[in-house]
Image (cartoon, rainbow, N blue to C red):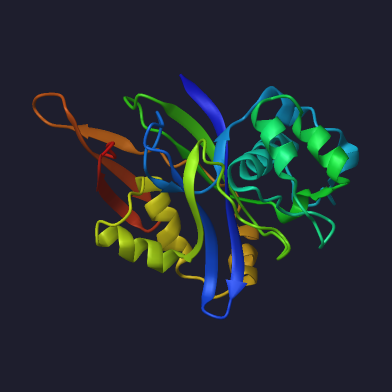
Length: 250
């Protein structure tokens, strides 16, 4: 079954360059166990039902069909990382109790926005990539990727449910740790980090993403050995074809 999903790259400028928010998924997870990922998850019905009064958009660059994915990316980022992106106010203070209620489905994301008196600037959540998990994978997602930022008042904090570690880190540092065997990454995350490592500022990154049009889904293909065991995945990128070993649990 192919599930609709959304992921969010939260980036910030530092004296050492651009850092991104990353989370480590718990080892018991059915998907990407133990891997460092960007916040994200499946799109829910409630993601298409948020009252427009909590959403601010010029409409100039937005596709209405992307709205549920943007809301899903926002919601999952709040659930998993405790961060609310693209808020109108620059003094946004998140709420741990509300976050837990959202995770337990005892409040909706709209109620979170209402209780925190927050409006989201949808134009500042930029759609920039689209990937589909390959056929043959045990769990499959059709995922839209977004870029955004958070104000400096907010604290990154993993949820200790789906994720057990969190950090702000430069893309090239994560890639170096991967090369040393210190962290696990899915192929899609590795590709995203390589691309992110080319940018020297958040504004440069977002300006580039806003110029991307006609974004087509990336469709990785699984490869098998003679016994039928999955061995690697081949991906056709604009940079050229790449091949990664199949992601496995530890």
